[in-house]
Length: 324
Image (cartoon, rainbow, N blue to C red; front, side, top):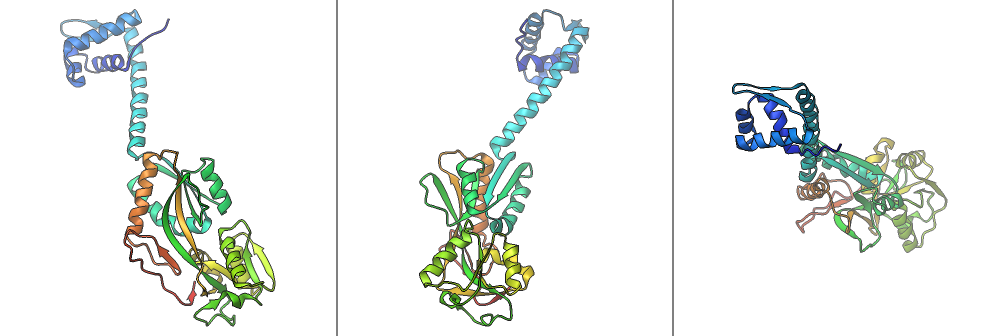
């Protein structure tokens, strides 16, 4: 036998059971007493059993009524919890966000924004997937990420872009290197230098390779590594010098390196991207708005970093040699 009871039937049964009075239950539910009585009678008819013993002074649950009300109460609690979750999702206070990004940006750009977002939306779960640039793009393409924060993204008509910053390149070297005291180092000066390079899949190496080609430079030797810490360690060991962008500098502080701006200036464009044809959840929309607010509030100055701001006057981070 199929039982066809609606949520309004269940709420009526629980209210009457709790108050043991149709009058008080009707007041709680905001309905007329006669309407409530009809709803309870309809539930009893559909269940084919009396749920309450009625008298002029009391309303008492029958044995079947007690069992039905226990189930009804559980169903209502689950339904209310689900509706609350839906309401939270639609208002942006619940849900989840997955951000695919480069390791250097996960460690520098995201932390202050995540901290503020969690203060405002503590029930939204944030997932940060840090990877090389090719994998970041793939995560966004396949829908594994809601947003991508990356460098020099390939032009794509399906992407909506939010400029975040640019970061220029520095030459990282030991403090005792002959270029360490310079104000600038030219890309052409790398002709005879052993070079520590990031792997071909790195967004860093894309720009470095272009700059070296433009300068007509062929380094004396080339050692490649994928990890920022590995590159920093190899450089600190005196095995070579390495060009690195501004957002990577804080991750290399442990190696006691000196960073001198490279000229002519090459920069990466740091951009937040989402897919044009995939609707953003309220939680993701609020993340995007918060990033805009963060940029408008003038984030912390970092060497070689120019933040994108609504104000056209963009202050530039300090230039010259910098020791991390």
